[in-house]
Image (tube, rainbow, N blue to C red):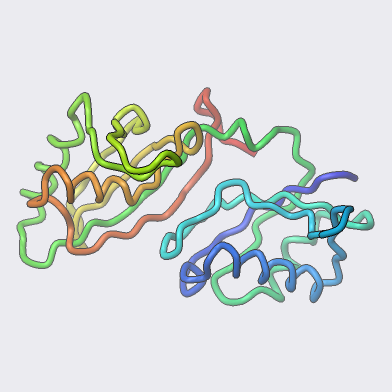
Length: 219
């Protein structure tokens, strides 16, 4: 057995754990559960563990993907349950399996969220959001590796739908996961820059599922 892939959830209080702290938490969890991670060779060896699409602090996910290697073969059928027992609240392992695809094949993320408005009419906001995101172009100022510049985020949004709910306006979107990567928080940022009247007082997002370029669920 070479590489192992594990799907897990990050919800509740765990959403406030940074990516670096999450990696340390996972490594300690493997040790507590009796699984010895394989380390890289060289002058600065490190555990061979990686998360496909690091999550922003404050965002939750039902579909995180982690790849790792162990020093010895292990039974995969009970690995998720064994690891979940030693993880902090909000980190729940779903399943472990041998991967057959590269994480570079992940293209789309299904995300859901809620945009909350304290004073404004939710139905009016919902209608405004639908109209705004129906534009062919949504050019915003965005930080890139080269600095801050104009970026059209519309091509990175495959679909986006809005619905009035008791909490506010629900969002369901299919956005680009890689090349380019679109953080769902940029949906709010676009409103802040282009249509401040539609910008929510508070917004939160949850990753629901990962897909490949053909729209098939990625595993």
